[in-house]
Image (cartoon, rainbow, N blue to C red; front, side, top):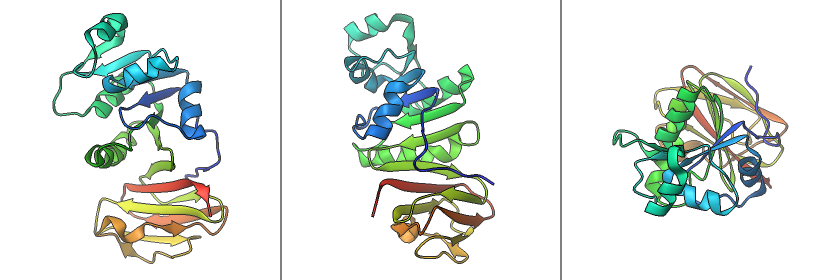
Length: 217
């Protein structure tokens, strides 16, 4: 039985900092600043360094780096010109190859909406190879490949997304129950609410993306 805790310490040994909104909420910001190691997408490197982060690697094609910063990074800059992957996947692949399997992603949302949607959807690929969460200033995205009991608090806002429109999902412990529901549209299982300390999602297949807010009504 898989279980997550919305109040738990999400500190990961490795944090990937993407080039979206730099985190301001205390949870993602704290996870970033307390990480054992930080890997930056190249567009996020300058901001990371400005707040005192010393990244172990900066990954990308380098088009977001000034000549001066690229020179300062030296061997920490990992050039990856592969146009089949976005910057987040380049950073993820670097971590995976290094054997770093406990990952938190921050800064992956909040600017261009197409980048945000793409980054969230990539979690369903990443979770097959690593233990990964995505933290934003408003909540946390987690991905499940099988039925799961997910810890929560009463009044916490919950949204559920599935990529297979034929997969049936049922729930227990949510204000608006899902009963063999097939999610053919992204909006259909959004804006739900946890009724207690956990809720249960039952499905065959996956992946299922779950979003839980930090704030509780």
